[in-house]
Length: 261
Image (tube, rainbow, N blue to C red):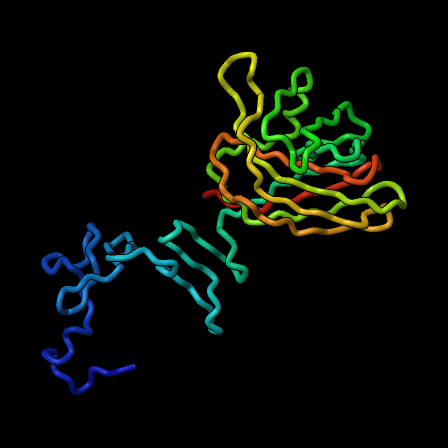
């Protein structure tokens, strides 16, 4: 680091910092911190406030706090409007959404909703709800008389969300090896005050994964592939499971990592 010792102000004024308000100095009003020739920095201060705002360009490194090993532990990214924290640099508003089912009874090749947030099957009155027999779940659904069951299957997004990761673990109830497919979807849900309220449309694949050689002797853990990450406020998120091989009961837990966008 350089020193100003023995140097005149005329030679060093460009490296000196001052506030822009040269009349009042630090006051109750934010004033930009400038160098000696009046070039503003990204910093402003008052007697009660401290502000960081880029002068020209938003960047992923607008603000950083690092430890002595130079590892970032707090970061503000004005390019993507995000704040990340900790050694993992996870989004500060990261959340975990969970879908789970105990002894879901399938028909081979059919996609079923996985209950959300602790709802279940065995020992309860909750019924399985199917959503297609194609390669992927159907992108629309009018569940008719079983629409009431969808309350337990859907997560209504309260804000715009970004999906960061999906992981699931799964087992079945016999010794027969099976193949299990999982799909995470978002839908538009009708809410117009009429008889079609609760119908699902505009289904979009968010993530998918497959577990093979699944039976009751193992817990298969799979990290799903992210296909689309954006979910808008008031869209609903649903998770589906398919037993490709047979009708063995499915036990499954799905974790969806997301942050508020």
